[in-house]
Length: 546
Image (cartoon, rainbow, N blue to C red; front, side, top):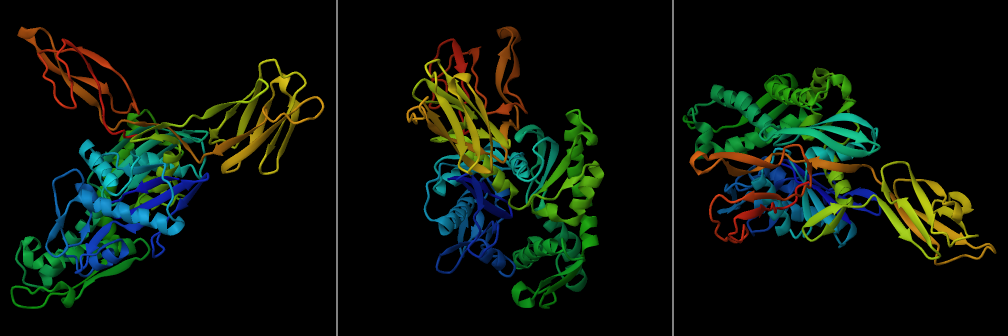
């Protein structure tokens, strides 16, 4: 089985790809997604998901959340009664819980490979921290995939297999946009951009700053820097957690209330009054708050479209991904401002994990690296008969070419699919081509060879497995230009410069060798250039990020 994991800022999801079909593994309480929240009780037991998320609404001390943004940094989060936890450790706990969901659904199974998605704007340190978290969770063969690419693959499950479309991915912590070309289900990313600090978490903070703090200032005697003082940290932490819940409720309601009781707040103002919170927030107020942020995301979409030589008329659809994309403002404003119709068929909460699973199944896994599976295969049978066929395709049909080296006179070959379809019989010597109709997932085709007397030639017959894919990733672009520092000119007029090895937007994975002459003696160091000859070859070696 292959796994696709969306390790999200607010919520995470896991999807398996087995026997040619995708399967979403739900939480133990039946939800499609797992809240990316972690807590520990007084006995030291750890809980991930809804129980921790619910606790965040009333008693947030020592609960870890929103740690995805902090991956790759030295930040530690307060956790438990007196301890701390790193974002990497917290992410590993979420991954462990997701794997438990798989075990609960289908038992222990072999995992061929796992793809975890990351924002397009993630840097190398954040990506490497994600890999380390996966290894700590017990995953052995792991690769990373940018979230817009995963979303693009998922969007082809039900939509058109051809066209140019835009993926608008607004998550809990980040915003990504990708310009995607699909030809017969084969997806290539023409461009993508991202904003690392634009998402639902920012909207929650804006609600607290514009609605909660003014309400408290009107009703209580609080210091100007109350939000920074330890005596009020619990109050504001609960307020932010409830602001998130209010934001979600306003996707379907026009008005909601952020409420924190005196018992939950456990704080008094400068006059000794017990503090409680009861703030009414309307959808209109929320939309006025976040419109500038949404417009910022739309501006980046326009930049990607225009910067690649397109207009809105060239875009077939915009695919909305991520929890905050369910907000009415986003669903109405984004397609209207861009002038592109919205595709609302894709589940914004699970699409990224589904796309990651599709991508994982399309790779050949070996240790920590993977390569794309061959789309065509050749099966050499006896009696000088071979079958050249499309083993993997996103089209509705596949062709099987029968090849003979000339020693198959009088032999006939018939094709029969496991769905009962009979594709007739032809002479092997004619080198026939059978066109087979495919269903989703796997189709087995039995090729039966008989001689002139009708006797079956076992050695020359074969059973061919053809997989119809929801989508195929033709390649993923490099998110940043990777370059090395070089010197040009002679010693008296040496100038420093950068030599790009992989340019932003070039398709990954990419291999190459660049020969350079060293400017000075080089000393051997572990993991770097290891001899001091005057001419060196520079090799890039790192975790593969597709």
